[in-house]
Length: 188
Image 1 (cartoon, rainbow, N blue to C red):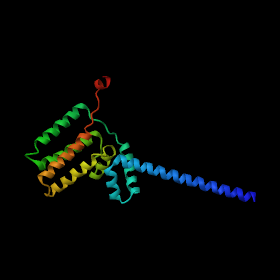
Image 2 (image 1 turned 60 degrees about the vertical axis):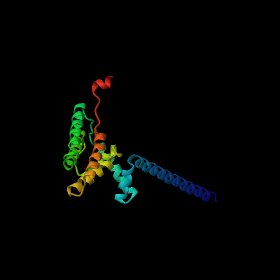
Image 3 (image 1 turned 180 degrees about the horizontal axis):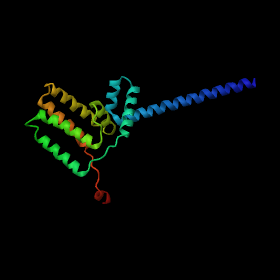
Image 4 (image 1 turned 60 degrees about the horizontal axis):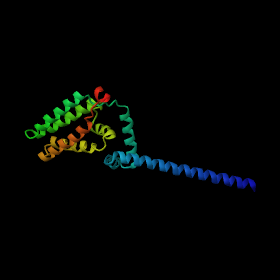
């Protein structure tokens, strides 16, 4: 009977260990899910809705993070930031006379800024996904601006929508306009 009791205790111990591992794995996945959800916010929800499951969405978001880790994103030098800022101010000044043209120019300026910072210029969804990793709070603005620009190309966006597109592009523009500190600023 002693052998049978030992086997029972070993089986019971193995079951307890396996249960502890399963509970630990569940807590780990839950913590990882919460971290992604907290970081991405509405982009997490949008991705989950688009892909149809939490697992697929989280896999997509982690793939974005890995892809962006491989990029060499750089802050702008102060002269480049000043040039982009002036270009944006000029663009906004032309809105009243040419709202449709300004939306196109705003999109081009944002793309130029992204490229200067080191973002690849693939298709829109890839660009939005890359932006979402470091700037999840403004990627919704980028998507909204793009949707309005597409409607404008079809001739179905009114002036108020065009104004909103420029505002959305501006939110992303401001977020991407990171400036590299000069040696003098670092020394101070």
